[in-house]
Amino acid sequence: MAKVYIKKGEGRFFRAGGLWIYDNEIDHIDGEFENGDILPVYDDRGHGLGQGFINMNSKIRIRMMTRQVDQTVNEEFLRMRLQNAWEYRKHTVDTSSCRLVFGEADFLPGIVIDKFSDVLVVQSLALGIERLKMTIVRNLCEILQEDGVQIRGVYERSDAKVRLQEGMERSKGFLSELFDTLVEIQENGVRYQVDVENGQKTGFFLDQKYNRLAIQRIAKGAKVLDCFTHTGSFALNAGVAGASSVLGVDASELGVEQARINAKLNALEDKVTFQCADVFELLPELERKGEKFDLIILDPPAFTKSQNSVKNATRGYREINLRAMHLLKDGGYLATCSCSHFMTYELFTKTIGQAAQTAHKRLRQVEFRTQAPDHPILWSADESYYLKFYIFQVVDEK
Image (cartoon, rainbow, N blue to C red; front, side, top):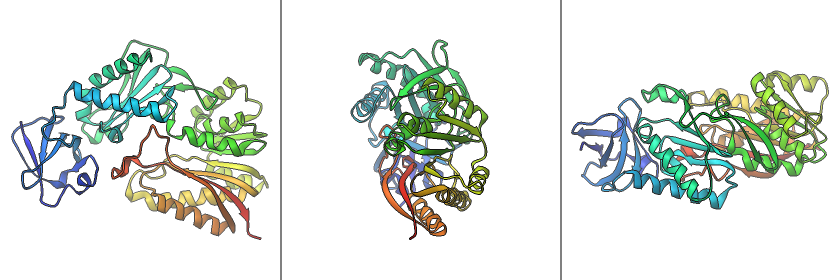
């Protein structure tokens, strides 16, 4: 078996608790191997650091599977990881629909598995884990079945661009017998139709589950604007909570169409309406018309997916928060978030503060939240912490 040796003083990210070793940290590799093989990793003095799968096509050269250099990474090992992931979810979240495996944060780097009712959606993003994918899926289904949870179908959504960086092609399709890919789920008392085949990423954003629930408390009787509504999840939580009216806005006609279907599922189509529009264009238009809202929700897509675009993203976050503050009634509420790992907590917080100063508004923080517990944040693995979510009361300077 080939052996990997890292340079003296390198592997800092891994030593701090992460699971990645980068291409420029490796000194040399003894022996022959194929991309995707699991290899033992040693420091410059020959001390074992663990084992991980290698891919010479990726800047993340090795994704570590274990910190034990003598550990056998086999089916029994994978089943242990999956059992631990399932036990964790049972203790921390409503498992009717949840993320069962969150890659590195569950010590299974490069794979995500979401459960929507009785359907699993798999996203495999790294070559080494791709080889183990079907073994992982089969064992996870068995673990769930042993707990009385029947899975009727599995769908793959490994169609993300990041696979190309791993030297892999995009992949999408059934990993089980065919089934209807429009799956109905219920979350926080709200019903949704989830399109696991054509929806964004795996079909539905489970990470905001409890953040959606948090806005129910302040939505009762409120006039609500939900920006970047996607398939209407925040808007519908406001509607279910008793908002007087809700307008959800998204630039995707497909998303808005699905949101309207979801509103009908909940008999909310008269109270919760949706509009296909560019939020950056609509907010100034609403301001010119003199519109005012009691609650505004900002749940934009990641404005930045790399360090290089953070500056432009910051301007985008500042603008939408500034516009939203102008549209709120005195004492109204702003729920605002960023789902980009590169938009750090410190920078996001600073950006909102700058928007408030420019708008001559005072912010009273109601709460700060992150992603739901089924998307655990693994300390020292910074990529696992990405969602920042604030609720503020916004008051005029008097």
